[in-house]
Image (cartoon, rainbow, N blue to C red; front, side, top):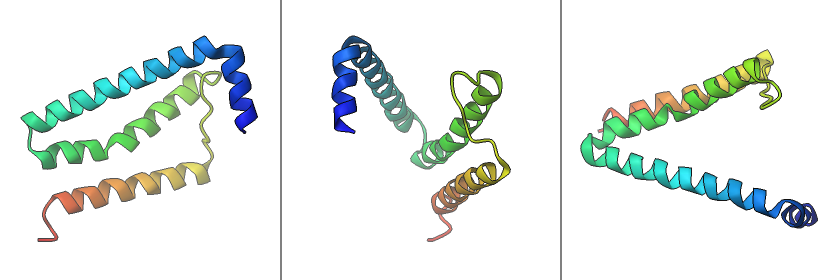
Length: 104
């Protein structure tokens, strides 16, 4: 595992670091926008919307698998689909339940 990483850095060092820096830049930008949203809107609303993030990731992954199969390959079997859907439903329902104040 470690040897493959070192070999990849030696062979494609510039590409790996460029991709990593792009990823970190996008992450920092996303966190800055999220923090700004927390300042403007109620925290419960922002946290509820943030709970839908896995749903959007799943939909985008599914669309990329259907339309650009060489770019990404998502498991589209019925079992895999139901497993991911169940996990996303747990996240969305539990976060909505906890943020609605039902426990108080």
